[in-house]
Length: 362
Ligand code: TXA
Ligand code: MG
View 1 (cartoon, helix red, strand yellow):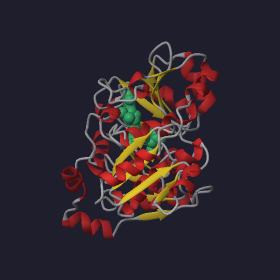
View 2 (cartoon, protein in one colour):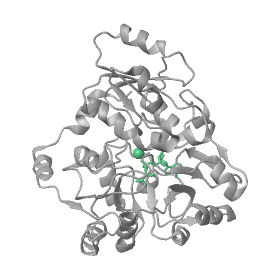
View 3 (cartoon, helix red, strand yellow):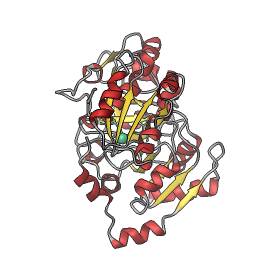
View 4 (cartoon, helix red, strand yellow):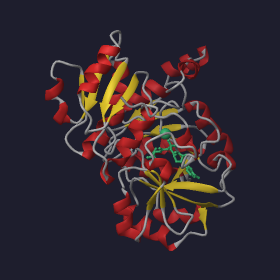
């Protein structure tokens, strides 16, 4: 669960920040065909060492010059993020990974060919030009080449690798709409670009490419089966597949409570008796209670506050973070979430929900 005290500290703005929030520069760009003039202005902010929020196909990112230690520090400060949680460097062309990584295996090339530009992040050994501030002191670097036209044009125009974590306050659900970043980061960054809602809605698949076999550290839209088709073998880290809190997190970022709304979230497996939900509600008579799950459960919970996560795994993924945020916007204090059945396609949603719930099951 997130620490409410810390959340308050992160959210509290100084007078100066409040003034900045009111004056926040926001560019609203055409997602398919971003205005070149505004892209140039935003790229200049990055080149000058500033911070820019921008849309990607997965979630919104909070970007800065990935080669500039001070710019990277600004990202950590804006998010309230622990400094040992490394950033992803975003590139405009797949071939640019060679400028950042060393000892790249043939598999890296195959993966880039199969999935870039797109929602894949590869962890490789880093070159010395990357400052320790970008990688949390690690000897490896995470690299991604996004496909969203605004992200692509911005990175290209900046001429730099753009370090960008998800553009949420540390600990809260990742932002998939412009309004989410405005509510989390207004006054904390130099420029916010909004465009469309994120097409995918969960963060990229993070894959460790430093060993013989690729290892998924964070599941996403690109699944183990997808990767196996491209390179042969692929493993999912045990820290991801174990249904309980891992003793050893797969990647530094996975050890922090993530994706948590203010509401308490409790989980239920798809095959569990739904009566558990009624019992839980009776046990929490003072809670403002809601149920969340696939569309097919809507009828069963008619007359209740029900958040539908759609009809298939992609829709589920796409609606997940905005629905977790909606719980807080709607004043819900406790939500029972019915997990999707455990398959290759639902691993990302299950992983994010287990983090959101702090591994709490009904
Ligand atoms: O879709 C995405 O990946 C979004 C968009 C903005 O591109 N970015 C994103 O970044 O989700 P962030 O910082 O929220 O998550 C990065 C994840 C963290 O779990 C972090 O620990 C892991 O990648 N990571 C970064 N560098 C790593 C490294 N060198 N070794 C292992 N894990 C790493
Ligand atoms: Mg994040």
